[in-house]
Structure formats: structure tokens, C-alpha cells
Image 1 (tube, rainbow, N blue to C red):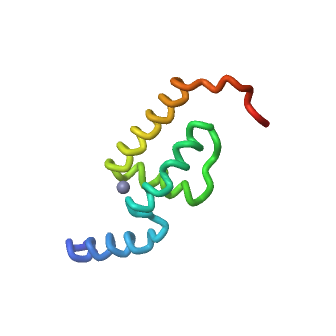
Image 2 (spheres, rainbow, N blue to C red):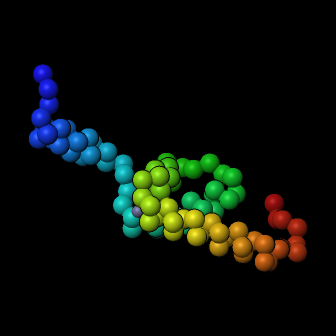
Image 3 (cartoon, rainbow, N blue to C red):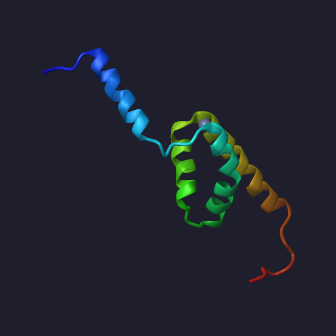
Amino acid sequence: MTLDKKQINGLMQLIGLTRDSEINCDQCLNLIAEFAERELAGKSFPESLEKVEHHLSICRECCEEYRLLIQALKTMDEDEPDPSPPRL
Ligand SMILES: [Zn+2]
């Protein structure tokens, strides 16, 4: 049997609905600073931030937002080297 366009659309919707772990742009932007800091620190991401990672892979706008944030954070690091030794 072959699927017609309507059936395919129905299936696509079904798949879309089951992906309830996806976040929207607002949620992504709320978490993006934490995500960027962890990325720069080389830390692993908790589950909540994995959603951010996924969103960045599919959303061009948030990806751009993230890129700028990373750049800003790196620039801050370079411009203001911390003279005191890191506190442990
Ligand atoms: Zn987005």
C-alpha cells in the first residue's frame, strides 16, 4: 500500500506531537546563558539543557543568539583577566 499526502501529513503531525520534550524559542532563550556558560566551562549538560542543544540544532535564530552570546562571554574573558588565583 502507498500513503497519500494526507496520510503522510497525519503521520508527521503524530510524530510532532509525540516530541513533547521540545522547547520553544522563549524557553530556549531563558536557558541559553546557562548553556553557554557550561559549554565554555566544558561541563556536561543536564537534561534540561540538552533540550536547548536540540533546539539550537533546529532553530537558526536561537543558534545565532547563542553564537553571539558565546562570543560576548569569550570577549569578556579576554578583556578582563582575573588577577586573583581561582578559588577552589
Ligand atoms: Zn528558537
